Length: 240
Image (cartoon, rainbow, N blue to C red):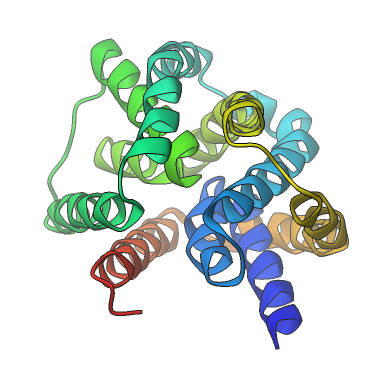
């Protein structure tokens, strides 16, 4: 049963990541936490996300906003060490509970047509938040997804810029996790078994991206954020 669940999680999350640029960690991490220890789930997520971003980067490089990307990276340099400290010192359930409430409130604001004006300071702040969430819970997507949704960024720019940013942040986060938390055989064997599923997800996700228009893309974004927020809220409250 766990094997079937693992296959479904990786395949669906890979399709989502490829078609939207942000879905793998948001969808996969909560469910991987049901199958693995927190450190293992986060590292499996980081490894597979890094594989997906590496496979797609050349294809989507024309859609990257390099100015925004540089500011995201600069902000994340400060956020990454904060995240690993949080992971090592703070109760994980309390962290999930706090993050879930923030995600739900901000998502509801977006649904109610709240909009954000993009600027350089906010770019760096969002990059920092994303960095801290990557090393703490392996989930960098919500801050950037909320930010780009609030600025009404085009789906091509969102996918290209986030994938390029993730290529950097996943690699650095994985190194930080291995150095400060350690790793084990389960992480690498599970990641190896998942590679064929990721390959299938890459192909299906590219097809899906061509058929999803901007309005459908925005609705899908809201649904993913609401799902993530509700899931983390339930798990952080100890109801699962």
